[in-house]
Amino acid sequence: MDLAIAIGYLALLFISGSIIAKIGEKLKLPDIPLLLIFGLIAGPFLGIISTADAQNIFEYVANIGLIVLLLGGALDMRWIVLKRVLNTVLKLDVIGLIGVFGISGLLFNFIFKIPLFSPIGYLYGAIVCATDPATLMPVFSKSKIDPKIALTLEAESVFNDPLGIVVTTIMLSTLGLAENLNPILNFITLAIGGVVLGIIGGKIFEKTVLKCDFKEFVAPLGIGLSLLLWYFGEELFPLLSSGYEISGFMAVAIMGLYLGNTLTKYEKQSKYIEEIDEFCSMLSTLFRVLIFVFLGASISLSVLSEYWILGLLCALGSIFIGRPLGVFAATSIPPASDIKERIYYSLEGPRGVVPAALSATIYSLIMTHPDAIPSAITAYIAPDAIAGSILVATFMTILLSVVLEASWAELLGKKLFKY
Image 1 (cartoon, one colour):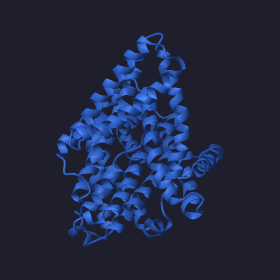
Image 2 (spheres, one colour; image 1 turned 45 degrees about the horizontal axis):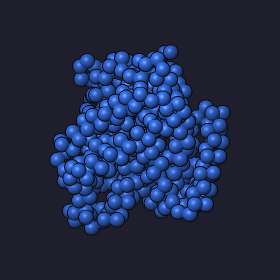
Image 3 (cartoon, rainbow, N blue to C red; image 1 turned 60 degrees about the vertical axis):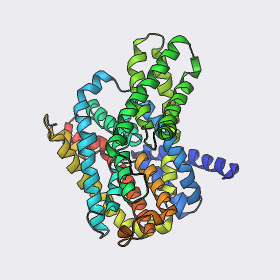
Image 4 (cartoon, helix red, strand yellow; image 1 turned 90 degrees about the vertical axis):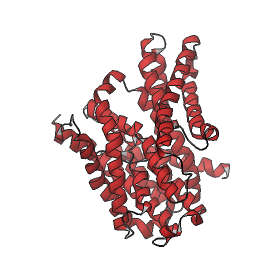
């Protein structure tokens, strides 16, 4: 991409994003759906942002932005508080997520009139089963929702990426688009490996800043180490382990959690947490603009017009059937959560960066390797239709869940909890 074009995009997005955020503030609307809609208008409708450019840029800003968001969000989590909600978080991240995956996949196949147990629908279900910290954290930071409820949903969204990625990888292997790795071992390396790598990264950072005062460079050091953990887990470790990965996102979140609960014990170094947190907060604002505008701009008009109605039905099914059933199944396991909390968890699980990044990657993968998909699957739906339908259904799920759930987050809390 030409340098001048890239700078022009950034100028347009940062200026327009600031104006849109101000308009949203005046109208008392969250900025994320407004940014998505602006991306749609600037991209496929007006052609100001090239769809191809948006797709290329999105992969970079989505991954780097999520690293920054996870680090900043995890730094604010205190273990003494997290322990109180850990039981619920684990149930939501395992039982709840699997429920959303299965029900969303079943509904996708039903809506697109393909065999109910076809892996195509369950690939969509795997993509959209994880919730999004990039949406939840900004929303809860501006609302008066019960900190316990907010922490539960934020922790769920931070730590449910590995299982979502594992399920997605398994479904890709059924389509001939990924290596047939052992799913149990794959989950262990992704999740447990991410925890171990994050603790190692946290200890390295802790020992380093205890020995040397980095002053104004402590925030870049923290971001740099986070990027290094992601790179090792996602890129270097697979080369050493025949394709198995460590979740770099999990590692970053664990490192942030570790540092937020250890450096605060040292009088001098405790200020580092505030500096890194503030630095991440400023970067997160920039990345939030880039992520959601480029996501909107990355959908081609032809694909959108062909699948938007069916994609909308899939989104409604995942949001209002898949998520509630999955959450109620998970939170009914003793000790069961209060019914009002279960309702709130059910209706507050927006999808965002991770589903967007996965859908864009899978769209490109299918379009590049259509012959890899078994003929038994393409007999019902062509490869380009698989790619397009999953991309649009995921986009509609992200857009609808963010628009609705970010908008009613505080109002729903007031109605249920009477604060």
